[in-house]
Every structure is written in structure tokens, then in C-alpha cells.
Amino acid sequence: MENSNTNWGQSVTGVVIHEGKVLLARHTYGGGAGKLIVPGGYVEWNETPQDALVREYLEETGIRVEPQSIIGIRFNMHDWYIAFRAGYVSGTPVSDGDENSEVVWMEVAEALAREDVPDLTKKLIQSAASGKDGLELTPYESNSHPPFSLYCQGAGAERDT
Image (tube, rainbow, N blue to C red; front, side, top):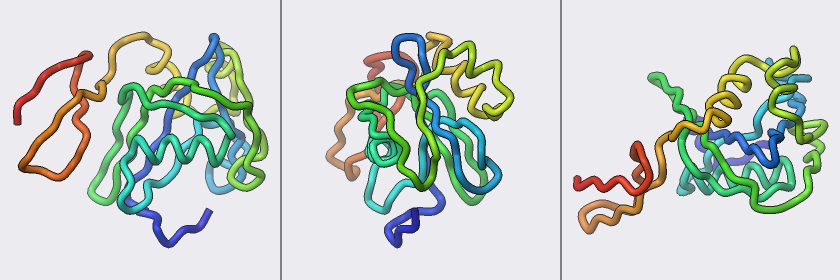
């Protein structure tokens, strides 16, 4: 869990819904101890949020995911948190034995009704399950800026900045 390469001001999470079920992990520490939440964690220095999401899911759940769109952003004067809709790629859920005690696929309706699923997780699940377009990764290259990712409303939106 502890890593000197961690950027404590940047974190990510993702909602993966596959075959009508959402992937949740039972958190083991802090205010979320005992709660079923969507996995995620801190971004490492020199890591993109998308790469952090893929890494965190694999480390915490054994599931390989692919970020698809941004469904939520929370930020304040000290840090930010990006929530992705992510697609299931492969793997079988397994607890990391550290940050979570179990990882489960659960029917979306059941997750939204359970008392051990926090409100933030429910809101993110609802957003991912809504089918509404979030912000989508849009191909963009620039010779004047270092590599970065551009997320825009709607697939294939073109922006010139």
C-alpha cells in the first residue's frame, strides 16, 4: 500500500459493469472499512490516470480493465479524483489480501440497494450504468506540448488547441 512513488494529490477509480454485474471490493481500512466500493487508488509520479486505473484494478482485484470514458471528477484546492467507466478485459476476481478482503461481481440493482455500498459508489455505478456519454478519450497530438490526454464530450470530438 505504501509507495514513495505515490502522488498523494491524484487518485482514480473506475466502474466496471460486465454482463449486468458491477465489480466491487470490500475495503479493509479507514472510513470505508467493511464497505463494498469500486476499486481505485493513487496515481504514481509520471503515470497517466488511465495507466493508474489499469494498474490499481489489476493489483487490487486481478481484473484487467480498459478505461473508456470519464464519468466524474472531484477536486478541491489540494487534490483531484477522476472516476472512469471502464471495460472488462480479462481475469478472475481475487482479493489482494491487503486493501480489500473480497472482490465480487454483483448485480447492479443489488449493489444500489445494499447498505454496505456507500453513496459515492452508488452514484458512480448509476452514472456508469446510465448509458449516457461521459467524457471520452479523444485522439489528440500536439507538437507544442508534452504528451497528454484530451477528454471531450462525445466520441471522436475534434478540438484544436
